[in-house]
Image 1: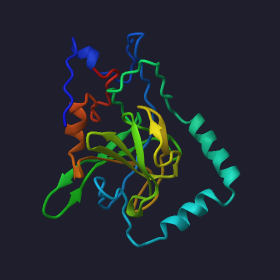
Image 2: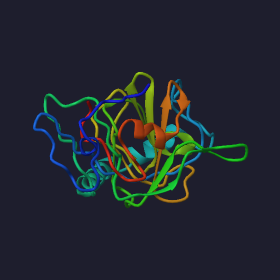
Image 3: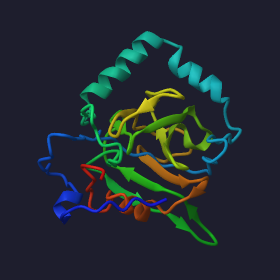
Length: 235
């Protein structure tokens, strides 16, 4: 699946770190987030979770959210509200085709790689502090939220037409399965859980269960991780 909307000029397509004015009908402000790294393979087309056998997925999740639940939730909410984020601002006639970056001010440390001796199926984004907000790149429905084996705490959002995006190694998950989210809405907080060697965001894209090359795929949707620019509008 490819989206190739025609825009009048290049400046209409992208927004960098400096915002550009947008038409009053539709405006998106994406959530800044941070990065997660990780290892493992997830079958997003079918199961959408990875069980590496290292831990009890329910036991870890219960300990994180049940023990001192009230104070933990308050602390998480406070971090999310104070982190360097942009809340998703939309109107009733918002454009459902807008795509945005999951965070800003990051460093792209690992890219998609698949060869005979090494495989890396996503992007690793480093920079924002642990507890910073991770924003959904597009509107969709949450199909996985919680412990996910080597990915640690993760969220998978189904964007329709077979497209699913994975956000991994989060410190906390702030959405639940079945929840509808908008572009830029906070879905998790940056962390270092699972098979991870530092605070970061791991981002993976799947189309009908097949992993995609994320840099190229996002560029087709007017989001460039190398230049840190994103689509303000959809069509």
